[in-house]
Structure formats: structure tokens, C-alpha cells
Length: 420
Ligand code: UD1
Image 1 (cartoon, rainbow, N blue to C red):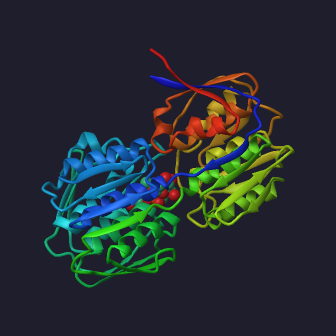
Image 2: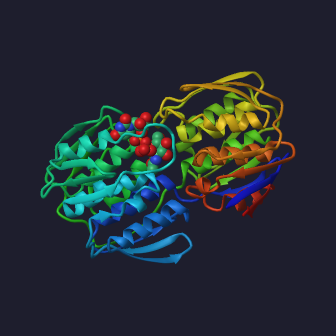
Image 3: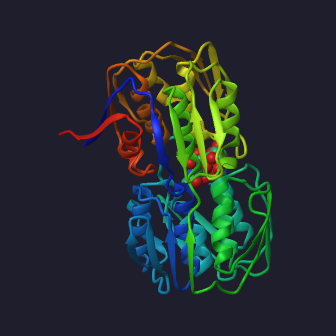
């Protein structure tokens, strides 16, 4: 078992380069199943979710060659299997994309019920509704979901809930369908645009990604070769922006898209931090205690739920009483118990948490309860006095590439330690 040992009281200073987006990568990898050929994916984050996805694709018949630390060549000419072992899919959430991709390519898919971080109930009824509207027969039972249809047919689908996963899954299933599919009330996250850009670069005809109406004109087949570079990770960039404010530091965050972070910038300015847009970088700095704030998580372009725990660390030391309302996930405040062990005063009930800001945190053993909570606890350890041990760091490795190295380059004293 590994843990992070952090000696705190550090003001983070320097430059950090953002990796490719996890949530785009875990959708683009299954999207390659729609291609009968070879494509190269660059700026792929080398994180455990991506490595597991590559193993699954190899299991289905793809050939993958890691040509560089962050680049693969993937040959999906021969896909000879449409059934994905349950033990592989139960490890992470994005395995649900295999349903849309295999259904689109082969007309049939059998995938174990997706696992992933425990953020509360994570239904996939909107994904299923979309597949059924396209003509598929979907069965759920014995830990598996199967979907079948010889000829998917384009149709209009209205999403009852704005869902990132369902929007992308319906795109995947309809790229090669007959006719036009329209998704109304679609999610607009940057990684949805990235998946559409990838597929369009391979010959798909997807219009309107990034707005709430997406139209997919089915094409007979995609190109047999291409190269694509994954968009920078909005959430990783936002994590470092908030780490700069929490630590009263000064960080230049390179290789990011500032407009993807407009809502985070607005909140940082509101609580007294400073942000400078440098084109493809952002500088964030602060030299005073943050002010209190009210935050509500919302689908893009609202404040992202995946930055809620990191913002929680900032507000835990803010001057005054702050409130966070989590409107996407039911159980996303488990990290507040861990912050309270470090001296924070947070009361969480249901979807609301009240942060009575304290002047400082102090080191403690703490447990990551999910991926983003883990990143937040590292931030807390960096600003706390004394030593913090962060356990369950396998959650963090799922989505952040070389996180300890990146924080160390900014001056943090953080070590990965193996423990019996
Ligand atoms: C994706 C992200 C995750 C992020 C979340 C919200 C990936 C791999 N994961 O997750 O990091 O926290 O978006 O930005 O990209 N819902 C339904 N029925 C459905 C689907 C969703 O009721 O069929 C609900 C969910 O319970 C949740 C809300 O819709 O309350 C949003 O979920 P969704 O956008 O689908 O999240 P994910 O795609 O799973």
C-alpha cells in the first residue's frame, strides 16, 4: 500500500504543465473502436484509468503501442469480441462508453456494470434511453448490461437530465447509425467537444458539440488513419489554480485553456485571489487569506463538481462562513470529515456543507474518499502545519499524472511512501 507523506506550511511557487484531460481520454479511447484502422493519440495522460482502458481494448482485439510516455498508436482493424469481462469494467466508471462504442461498431455489446468513485447513486438510465431510442434492445441483469441492434437508426433524443456520460455515449452509438440523431438538452463540457472533434477529424459528422443541441449525421465508415491530441485537463488546471490560492502562492499553469476555467477564475477573484490569462497559460497568485464564498456546482459552464473538494479546502481556511451546494452528486462531502480531522470546521448535511473558516489546518492521517477528494487532501497537507499522511492514493493515481512530482516542482515537500 502506498501513501503520500506531506510536510506542510508551503507556499506553492513556480510552473506546472497540465496533462491531457482524463475525462476526454477515457471517451476517446473507446471511440477508436469505431475506426477500422490505425490512429495515433497524443497528449494522453499516463494515469491508471487510461492504462486499464488500454488493457480492455487489447482484450477486445485492438493492438496498442505506447510510442512515447503520452502517445499511443492504436490499431482497431480487428475487433473480435464485444463482451468485456466484468472484473475489468467494475474498476472504473467510464467503462460505460464501451456500450455505445461497441454497439456502434458491432451492433452488440456486453459490459459489466460500471464501477468508479463512490459519489452516491450513479444511474445510467439516460444512456439506456438513448440506445433504445436508436433501436437497440438493452438488458440489465447479473452485474451486466447488454445491448443489441443490427441497424441503429438516427432519431431525436431529449435528455431528461444533463449528463456528460449519456451525451458522449449516444454520440458514440450514433456516429455510424443510419440517418440523423439529435440530442436535446445535451451536456456541454469541454471534453464532449473534444470527443466530437476527435471523431470529426476521423470523418464523422457531428455538429453543435458544446451547445445543448447536438446533431449527428450518421456516416457509413470512418477514416482508417489519423492523429489527434487530447485537450488539456480542465480539472487538473483548476486544481492547481485553487492550490495557488489555498497556499497563498504564485503558480503559472501551462498548457491549459483559460476559457474552460472562467467560472473558477470568477470565484477566485471573488475571494480575493488574482488571475492573469496568458493565452495558453494562467497565472494565479494570492498573498492574503481567502474571503468567504457561496458555491453551487452545476453542469458546464457552471462551477464543476470535480473541483468542489479542492474549493472546499480553500473555503475551510477562508475568512468567514462559506456554503457549498453540491447539485450533481449525492455523496460528495465525505472529504469534509477528513478536513475536520485537520482542524477545519465543516458541517455537511445532504447536498449542502457549511464551512466556518479557520485560520489554519494542522497535519493528520487522512483518507482519500475519491479521486478529487484525494487531490484536495494533498492541497490541505501542503498548507497545513506539521505532517499529513494521505492514504488510499490509488484513487488519485486514477486521474492525476505524476501529481507528487508536479507539486514537488512547485516547492511542496511530498513523498510517495510504500507501507506494509
Ligand atoms: C462525468 C465525469 C465526472 C463528473 C461528472 C459531472 C467522466 C468519466 N466523468 O461523470 O468526473 O463528476 O461527469 O460533471 O467524464 N444521471 C442520471 N442518469 C443517467 C446519467 C446521469 O440520473 O443516465 C445523473 C447522475 O446521477 C448525476 C448527473 O446526472 O447526478 C450527472 O451525471 P453525469 O454527467 O452522467 O456524470 P458522469 O458522466 O458519470
